[in-house]
Length: 382
Image (cartoon, rainbow, N blue to C red; front, side, top):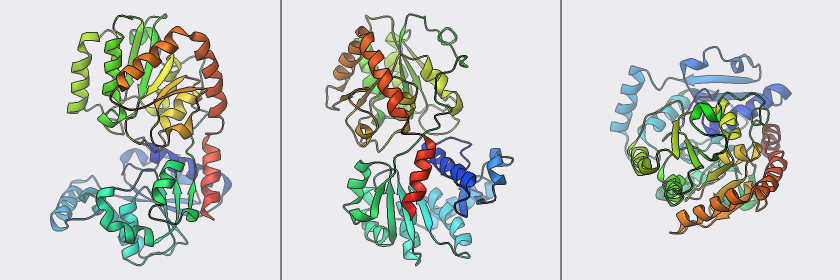
């Protein structure tokens, strides 16, 4: 539900931008993109493409807000909430007037359900997450109407194969812009500007800040490390995608927990995506302690591209992104905070191990570039 081009960020939205950019460069297909409108799109250079065409849907004006509330009042028990369902109906009003060879649905099983119900064929679902178990009553129609499924990891492929023939499911690993994620000679931020000393050992966490990401357990580990004053943690992100620093109750609870070691933890809030490489560059290691089955988090790829040793978990598609040579992979049992503490100390006291892991991170990152992703994505469509 974030706009394309990805002026508000968002992992899925950035990936869509990557394959649209590749399509514009190679002139492969005639693509029409439906997207919510955002004023920052008005003069975006992507709109000049002669093969990618954009149709924008108003979802934020006063009229649209009233209409979507009314839609929600009149329509109950649908797949998504009224915001997404209203958006779909606005897209459908235009879509039904046109003929496309294929319709690619980005991460929207509920939208595949509605299109299947209304007789649409040649639907391709690009799955970035598992389908909602709570919406299983819709799944026969969802998967019955699909031609193919693309998944971001083999983990999601296995989950999708419960509902759909596995031979019609193909994994296409995500990519990132390696021309942006590389160490720079003059980064936009320094340790000093953030209050860190040159001899501090800086751990970085970046991404959404919610319970399933394991940030609370990471702070618990920092509490166990309070007697090591040079071990510091930098937490980057907010409770949702986009340029917002609004704090929810969970973030406030984390800050309250961290008060006793407030000199060892900083919360930066939202950082523009283009500046993320600079924050990763000044860090010693990345910790991504997801406690849910994270399908294929791009934060792992970004840390890897910056040459960071990684501490992460054996959940979802994460083990497909890294290896045991550049990441310490942890179980997410009730002792996760202890596991994190031990892993952090291991890397803190063994700089030679970090050096070896850094070399592997750089090497592995070469595969996960956006051009390879886009090429594989289009090849998988045929």
